[in-house]
Image 1 (cartoon, rainbow, N blue to C red):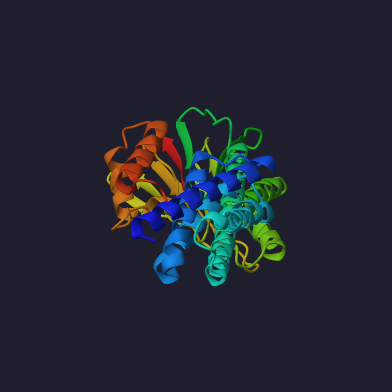
Image 2 (tube, rainbow, N blue to C red; image 1 turned 30 degrees about the vertical axis):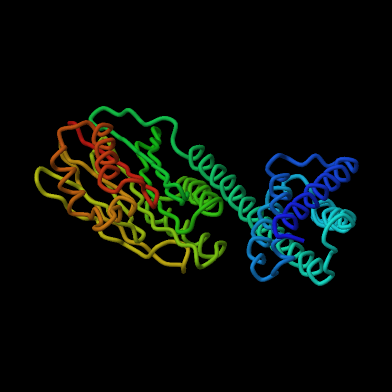
Length: 374
């Protein structure tokens, strides 16, 4: 038989096989999409190539079968995939071989095995993608929950006290951490409590620990005679009840507005400083971070004056940056340069400047600003 005649006969046989396959799978309830149908036709053409030399067609068969499975697995399980798109196709090839070149058993077996391999690997890859998608979805849900916890814990009202301005900010990173700030006026005691905490870790676990820090430290305020006692008691609970791989840096202050006296306890937190005119003074740690071991804490006392600015910040500010961190010195210069702004405006200025400098934050950015207005 001439080459053209063999080719025409083979094409005719493939068309018959395709028609037979389509009729069978439709009868069984499967309605192939135009894309899936086109890939089955490509498989039939590749089978024709395989009949002349299997190695030359191996790669095309595998790629086509893999792509076919990746599409069809969206609505079929592996059993139906094999039944409709391998077994029915093989039956159609064999049943229509009576009017063309006879089937070579070895070619049919190799063809079937290669399709099976491609289907199995496509199934495995689809499962991996599904697992990754579900994991990403779970993480996304966790982050949403963590952000909701953070928002719920933040103060809803900032005290308004003559002679002072207060501001607090929290800008969560994409991966939520555990920053927390608080400004609360205990009017009967004449004390404003100031807090800024940074919990190591991320997600719901860190956000939940933020809640613990808030309520534990808040609970120990009543009955304590000094801010250091509040922090010592808070640390005692955290050291006993939280995992040792989670630590909390925290700055905690008592401000007495009538006398302008500020007492600060610094549990391993930075940056914490006060700016007066063109000079900034650091409030260095007066004890270790919370949650590691029980410890005593000392205090730093300072008498505030008109136009003084007290700044508590998180390391999300000083460590922000792509090639070079924003740093404490740049932060101090920013505060001094904008010292005439209100506490609210200064807080916004810091957030905007750091965001412009670093782009998308990799860690939470939080701060507390206290300004003495006279």
